[in-house]
Image (cartoon, rainbow over all chains, first blue to last red; front, side, top):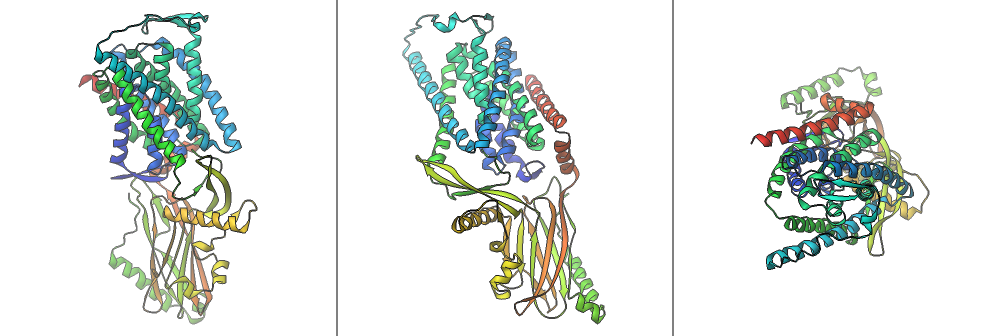
Length: 308
Length: 257
């Protein structure tokens, strides 16, 4: 059964899109990532223009994240205070990111920048996470409970504006989550994703949040970042396709619920290891595309200046 | 809902017969002025929710013997063609050329191979055939580069089924009645298409006829597009609210399960 998408201006198979939404939604519930870094390339692959894919994907992630956050809230796994502070930083960062994006687009070469930042950040984040989680899994298996120091003091703990985050069991400077939110916001805007795959490791390794609250809190702040992106895209580019978004989110909300259920059964380091493998897989795919000789050296696009 | 011009064969035959009578009943002098009578099975192709492409039947009659060329083209826009080059091991969009006047959709059909009907010069002059579409490059580049970019534009459009050539698909019933089927794929651009029919004999264009085919979104598809462009902030806000409700609803349903 096919349906014609009014904004994308093409017809797609309903079941294919539902399945894609469900699959990516499952991963987003499992790992606490929005799934934009998977879905956007998938949408472009089935022939949807990059502009519509990026904008509609943001809209879809809003729904998947709400569904995921509700499930995590019931398990008391969302640190709302932390989420709001990350979100404030994220809003400021995405504003700066959109500004940088426009600047680079005017120079040309924004495609390359987007692809290179995908390879660089997915590669770095993926390798670090894989390395750390494999080590954690082995340590757990061998039974050597070398806990190390309970609390490592670095210069980061000397920063002012300390706040208590009860759910995360942290007493740290508010500048830290604000800064992380800001930085991830910049990259998210440039790369056209929610930023979960950057936010989740940053929360674990930089903030030292307990793994149990990381996923829910990440999803919580992604709701606001992607809602903001949806609104901006609809106003500036008219590129949000509600019909496509509805199909994707129908699949995604169901997938996200299932993913959340499975996520409760897996250990933190196993989850991180799986996410790392997935991130590295996407990184490798984009990397190979950059290096392999394209089938046709020439490509066409309707709107001069835009591209992903 | 599907705007596919699937006419039963009896109806198609009736339409052709009507065309025959229209031509036969014309006074002799009027017929000379109007050596070509053409009509489309429909003037409007409506794109609605179930749209998967459409077939439009073009039929007509000629006065005197000749061959027929049909050219269907959508409104033009500018298109960027980019060429990748390997820089430091990575394939990068290195050069780009903007072409103005590139039709979004272009279809040519004829009763014989095009080169058997018209000289190359005549085909170029009347933009007949995908190689003869007069794209205007936005800036000056070498002829060699311009050709490479031009060919790449046509090749990419052909790959997505938007530039098509179908010689031999205009079929004659007898010596004066002809018809052809114009297939519009699901990704057709919208707009007022120009449908030109040329009557050709001995390498000369004897007569030409132009009609308009309106391809546009209808119903819900049209309303959504209009809303998205004319009330963008509200559209965006509603899109977000729908997502919030859908997410909440799914969470609600799954808690019960």
